[in-house]
Amino acid sequence: MIIEKLDEILSREDQGSTDYKTANWLKDHLSVISSQTLKTTAEQCDVSPTLLSGLVRSMGFENYRDFREQCRKFAPAQSYRRILFADEAGLAENIEEMSRRKIENILWCTERIGQDRMRELAFSVMKAKRIYIFAQGYTRPLAHYLRTELQLYGKEVVIMDRKLEDDYRLTIGDLFIFLSIIGQTFRVNPEIAVRINSIRADKWLITCNEELEFSGERWVVPAKDSDYSEFAMRHALDLLLALIQKMDNEQN
Image 1 (tube, rainbow, N blue to C red):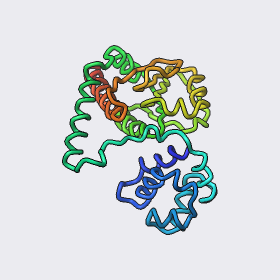
Image 2: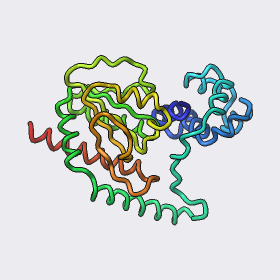
Image 3: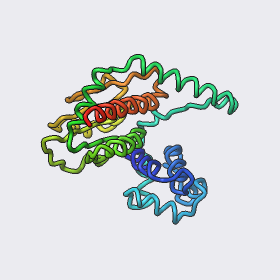
Image 4: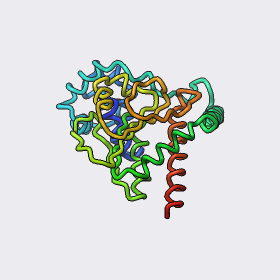
C-alpha cells in the first residue's frame, strides 16, 4: 500500500530531511498526483525530477508512472487523516484547543482502561522469549517505540514485514503483538487480516476498535475522539511499559 510505504519513510527520516518533506507532501496529495507528470509533481515537492524518481524507486515502484498508477487506485485510508488544527482559528487558539482535547482524551482513556487485560498482556510480554510486532500507518512509530523499550529487558523484538510475506518459524515462547488504532489495516487489507488470524501462536491485538475480528487476545484502548486515538494508544503503551518495568523490578 502506498500509505504504508510513505509512512515507512516518514518514520525513519528526520523531519527536516528532503525525503521526509517530499514523502509528507506526496502522502497529502495522492489524488492530485494521479493526474500529474513527474516534472509537475517534482516542482510542487520542490525537488528535482531525478530525486523524486529515486525516492519512488526506493519505495519499490518501477518508476514514477508505476507510482502514479497506484495513486489512481488509491481510494481508502484518508478517512483516518487527523485534522487537529482548525483553518479558521489562529495558532494560539489551535494550540490551546488541541492541548485541551489531548489531555481530555488521555484522562478518558485512563479512567476506562482495562487494567486486568493490561496486566495479562504484561505477563505475556514478560514470559516471551521473542516478540513480533506488526503495525502499519500511524502505528508504525509505536512499533519502533515498543521495540526500543522491550529490548531493554533482553527481549528479541522483531517488527514484522508490512505485508506479512515472511514465513515466521514459530517456537515456544514467541509472542505476536498487532497494533491497529482504528482497524484500518483489517478493513483495507482483508488478506492481511486473514493471515493474522491464521497465525497459531500466543498473540495480542492492541486497538481502539473493539469490533475487529481477531482470533487471539485483545486489549481495547478507550478513545473518546477518533482524531486523538493515536494519543490514547501511546498513553496506553506508556502505562503498559511502566507496569512491565515494575514487574521486572519485583523479580530482580
